[in-house]
Length: 364
Image 1 (cartoon, rainbow, N blue to C red):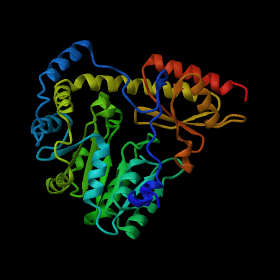
Image 2: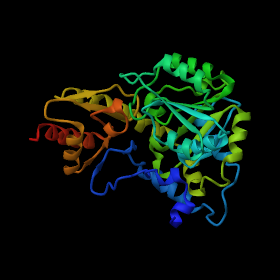
Image 3: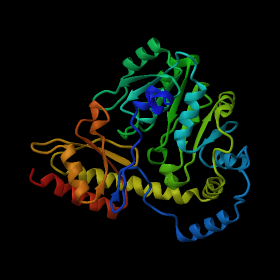
Image 4: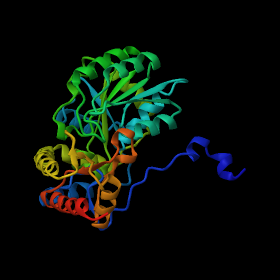
């Protein structure tokens, strides 16, 4: 046996790494980023704050100032706290490791964010997927049946969902939370909350098994890699035991504290993107061979359906025109012939629409 076979787990060897395509020279519409930069005066002040950061010191391990600003600014109910992660990815890993009792399972409606399954399997948890309905809504009966059968330690509900963009029915979500009960936790992932303006954060005091997870990435701070998670204090204390010390670096800490003082700038950018989402959706719906699905996120899922054209062909033609989006068709059977595209600035949305029109009409 080789060194790799002797040392690396068989399941890890069988995995495919998370691929991030090189976007150099492309109009980048594949990663659900906020396309707007900060105003120049804020960039100047942020630079001054960052220059004062003591890079020779570890961050304050409690992150108490940043946590307090997040709670006060981003709607965490009074009396509850948060823990922080290097993006929501690390929070998913923390939850997975903390809940990885022998035989424990993770339940997720599919299609969904791929890292739920990745971190579950890396932590040794069994992963159970329940297909959404064809319109991407929750299959209530199938979810409740799966909860009764598998008794999951963790159930993830993305609100809104990635890659479909829709908000699940809140009443059905509450039924799921109640069905899980004290046997497990339900993590409501609100990564796209700034574009949905709907949240389960206020219901944390209603359910002791509810966890609300968010990231500032989609809000406009993807580069600083910061996620936060709110829940009952006793539950957070257990998760905090798994969190690596100093997991949020001091530059992220300083930048996030600064932006909590100016969050209205990011809120205004989110409002612009919500407006552009409606315009882009209408323009796409007017194209032949394009079905547009409702979205409460900062992206749109579309299905290419027409004679002589499919999502793979259109995706390739867009790449030739230097437009990078996500080919979602390979992610799940329900997403056949689907593409996912960021909502961006009016200029980039126009470039995408022009390239898509040309790609739909190009000869095969």
